[in-house]
Length: 420
Image (cartoon, rainbow, N blue to C red; front, side):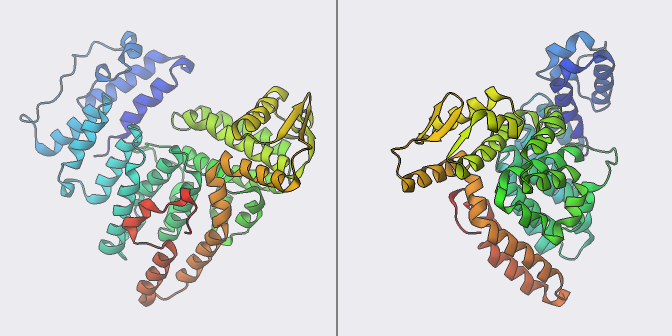
C-alpha cells in the first residue's frame, strides 16, 4: 500500500482552493491519478468544489470485494472509504487485514496515516508503542532499523503528538526516536525523493521548530542549544537555531519578526499546521507576556507592543485576556499594567506563578522535567559508547529512565507532572 499520499493530495487541493489560479489543470491531473487507481474525485466530500472542473470519465463505482483479488481489493476499499472520509470504516478494514500481506512496518505506516487524516491522533501512540516493541524484539540489529519506512513511522508519531498540541511530549518523542534510530536525522534533513509524500519534510521541520519554541521554558533555551548530540539536528533546522538564539539574547522584537513572518507564512500554507497556528501563536505571545509580568511590577502596553513588535491592540487584548482568564490581581489603567497595591507581595508572586501554570500546563511540566530531559540525553551518549555485547544492559537502563515498559508509555502522565 504505497498510494496513501494521493488522499492527502486531495485534502491539500481543497485546503488551497481559494489561492489556486489554474484549478482546472490541477483537478484534471489529480483526477487522472485517482482514475489510475480505480478511484474518483466524485466520491470525495469536496466534490461540489471540483465538479465544474471534472472531466467526462465514467462515474466510479465502489469495488465489489467478490470480484477482485483479496490484496488489491482490500487496498481499493481502504482507499475508497478514506477518500470519502469514511475513516473509521477504512481503519476497520485495515485492522482486520492480514499484516503479512504488506509487512508490519508498512501496515503501521498506513494505519498512522489514516489516523492523521481522520484526526484520530491519539491512536498513533499505541501504534508507536507496538512498532518500538517490534523493532526492539523482532528486528534488533537488522537493516529494518535504517529503513525510511521506520523513520516515516516515527515522524508520523511525532506529528500526531504535535497536532494534539502535546508539544512537550512531541519533543520528548523526537529526542527518544533520534536515540533509538540515529538515521532519523538524516532522513528528516534529506531532500524529498518525490515518492509517496504524505507530510512534507518542510512541514515536519516546521512542526519541530514550533514544538521546541513553545514547549521549552525561556530560561532553558540556552541549555537546549548546548546539547551537543542535537547539534546535527539544530544545524539542519536553521530557523529554530536562529529563533533560540534571539530568545536567549531577549531580542524579542527580532524573534517575533521571524515568528510572525516566514514561520507564520509557512504554517498558514500547510493543511496540517494552519488549523493549529492560532493556538500556537497565542501560546507563544502569552509565554513572552508572562515573562514580562513576572519580572516587572509596572509595565505599559505600549512598551510591550514596541518591544515585541506586536500591534498595540493585540497586546492589550492578550493582557486583558490573561487577567480575565486567570483572575489575577493586576489592573489596567489606560496604557499601564500594574499590580494592585492591596495585594501582599507573597500573594502577588503566587498569582504570577499561577499565570504561568495555567497558560500552558505543558510549560510547567517542561520546567519540572528539564533536568530529567538533560539527564536522558546524557544517558543516550553513554549508551551509544557501550559495546554491542552490553546492549541488553543499556536497554534496561533506558527503560528504567522511562519508568515503564513500552505498553505503559501511552500513560506517561506527563500532563500531570509525574517524573519521567
